[in-house]
Image: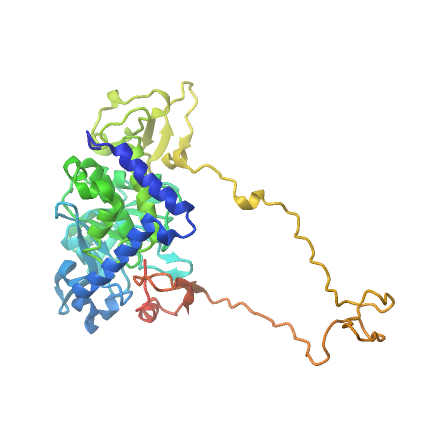
Length: 490
């Protein structure tokens, strides 16, 4: 965290923006709403000025999941030529200093999964962040490129297998870390896949802490290859991908005193970050809800400075500690500490164990001989239950409105008869208030089909209605991708 900077005032200002947005009935009139609308206008201008000629070529059409989400030619990732094409739907994203820190990519599909692995191989990528699941709401989001039940999977000349010798495997409620090996012939590369499990398309997570945990673990594991790009993808490489990149840039901004002191970042730090990354790829941070979530993460990172800081010991053995200091505000950069210097007092020390199947979090405050319970770090950041307004409403039904004055109330012996003023009541043949000229409607029988349908929610078009398109799952994944092209994604 930067020094000699009034971060509290900036944090309070961002919190006021969040509160204004959440309390407003017209979110478009709030500061966050106006900023996002401005970002959308700038995106339209950028798309007009930055061509995407390569991605629109017929030979590359099947490599795009959505025809309106194409990389700008100026910033696209290029591969070694194969079959007269060097194309993949991926873009370099630069940090504040012009370094290509990230690659924002479309999730691989059947026609691009080999290119996806080739990109990892050629650019020596060791860290991959995936924020989507292979199937969401009954529809495919990307082609899974890692072995699950299998030990290995072959894609063209690349084989992907589990790295069962690695001690980096980790599983918690929110994310998984999967050590993988990519092989090409006799050559092998080790990568770590950081898979966030619960981030729905066009939506945001329920909690901020798992995102920061995942990023801290990633940087703690990158000491061997800190200069290679971090590959981030979801389905189309827009909304969730851009949100993760913006959140990480928020963290880096708070550690860069010189940049953080600049006027533009002091006034609207999140807006400046969002407009910066949108230079390189279309629709990064796709919805105003995701833009709001980046604001919340900015505040969370400030308040959690060194409250969630990973410390990796030599050789990554079982003595890995997660240090939590709730009473101090120090630098949040990870550092190596010895086991003798690990604190064990109070709830401030959280210890990471590394059994064969994965690491677990353990509270080291037990003074008895009984083993401490196994807890996840995210358990300390679960949101408090809130009583909704629906629960407080009375269950008393609304009063029944009065009967019409046109009902016959004088001739009690004629039940159910409807008499207009000036008419003489007659004996009713039946007590059903229905015109003889109106045919009785037969109840319509609705049948539900067992065929899965899903909402077309992915889009780079800010005016698209995700709920207006429904598609049946096709018999093959390739055919589904062809049918979906042109409709949009996160």
